[in-house]
Length: 501
Ligand code: AHR
Image (cartoon, rainbow, N blue to C red; front, top):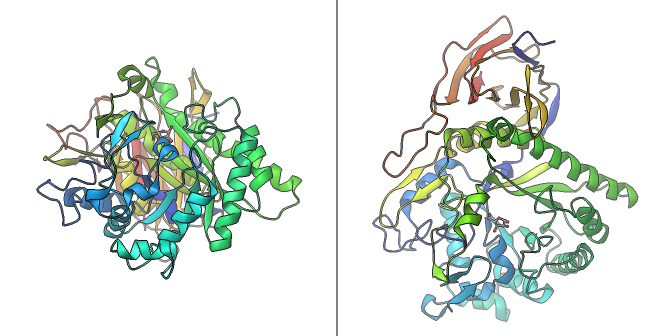
């Protein structure tokens, strides 16, 4: 029985796993204004010689993004990679069927790689397995990664990029289980194409890391059967299976929304179980990793109501403006990923700029941070090293969607080089503060270095063009560490980062 205080014990001997730096990835899709007037706006006052917005580059660096998935998303399933290469004036304008937009191709492969180098992030390239297949995947791989001396690699050199791009991480298509996907396939059809593409790509480079499409969400009717069938075909040929999940508040049910990580954690557990079941059937010692390469809060109902454009260039699409409530949920989703750091070794916040994004821009105007920027930046900065095992004993409350849920959602990481420990904690109660006690028995930490809080008396508070700094993290009060016990009070509906050294 809980006395109203949430508790857990932290012992550095009990580890979940090393946190992969790739857990802090993001996603740039040719969708709406993510690319055009987002990362790329040649006429912007801050644009560099390549047309990249320097104000956005600075924010992306501050966000701490380690990997950027590109160029889609649904967009990739009708995309011809060659369109985004070579002299800009010769690049074709194309219809993008996924988002009913016109694609100018002014930004393409070379610009993406240049962008990554400027923000110090790794490429994660998605392949079109919707309208295309093995041959085009191999051509892209050779164009991108072969040093020179062949038609395709020399084409890249002639386009101004002498050095190969060195892309290691590839997605074998996008959401191929979804009927909305251009070139949608059954699990059997996709499993064969994924396996054949993977086999061929490994002939070029055995060291590539390949992600097979899992389900587009846990609620898909084919969920789990899809993963099992695809992996029966491709288990030995791929390294990861993908997961996608988006959450939103429905019908004012904020308690369930704040518990969205319950779904995310069960999704992860179920995909791990499915992968390991196939591994057991195949008598394989190999363990498939999870790539949670699309996750976020996304108000899909608003998007459905707004409808799609009529072939506009860079239309305003999916430009959700996030509240402090959304940011607390996003923090909780980050906690869920860290709690599964042993198996989730790639994750991409979808997306990076303007489109369901932590960074917003105005064409010709400023760039600013949404509320969701802060938990991501803090987790990327401090959530490194080893994820420690955290089993909470917490007061609970009832939610319509997930039943009884603990009010505390928490994880912790330890940096072995310094011995510093960071706790990440969310109080899911809308109205009540949550007292927290952490027994730090085996941990050699003596003081609280800092307690950052994201919370607001107004759960609807958000940052906008007119008030870009309305919501920012502040310092938590009254947090102490004495006699091996940390004591804190977590404000109602708050995201907390407590650093111990
Ligand atoms: O991120 C927006 C869209 O969500 C992506 O294009 C697609 O993969 C997913 O359904």
